[in-house]
Image (cartoon, rainbow, N blue to C red):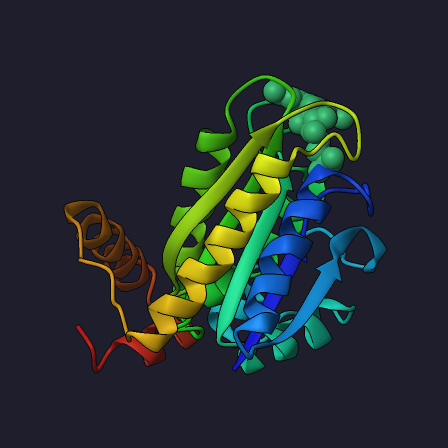
Length: 217
Ligand SMILES: Cc1cc2nc3c(=O)[nH]c(=O)nc-3n(C[C@H](O)[C@H](O)[C@H](O)COP(=O)(O)O)c2cc1C
């Protein structure tokens, strides 16, 4: 089993980083192979919005996202970590998410367990956690939960925050051990129906997506 943590904070030793590390350590103790990816250190270009990945199946841009997507395919659990930046995720995290658009249209990480870590100066980490939860779902990943905390300076992370992050790691490993699956909610059905409607409406354009979905709808 492999768990990958994706860090969206530019601070290598920041609060999200410490929490993500604690979560991954717990998973490692539970027998997972773990890896932490610092988006800040990756050369990832902005999505061009050209739609080539939706029509032809592959992204036009040849950068470090190629390798990163391959790594994600090998993982069983994915933990996204981002600080709150202006009521949302960091630019690094958003750029990464946009470059995963084909994974959202043709969920290729189906069945993987996911979780979220977020840190804020004063407010809205739940907003980020809920947003990232939704993103994980579009990739086919069931989010197990999230761990959040508050503080401004790097390394201000508290013992209780780290405990919550470790607990999140435990919840992820238990979910795998006990083969837990999330209940399907109304919002999940809405999300799936929206996607199918989009792809059907634009099937001449989103050819690769339509090929993927046509036998399923
Ligand atoms: C550009 C920027 C925007 C921020 N926006 C918010 C915000 O909207 N709300 C908030 O509570 N904190 C905000 N913060 C504070 C960070 O969330 C906080 O410093 C957090 O601890 C950073 O986590 P990190 O150490 O993992 O990078 C912002 C910080 C920066 C640098």
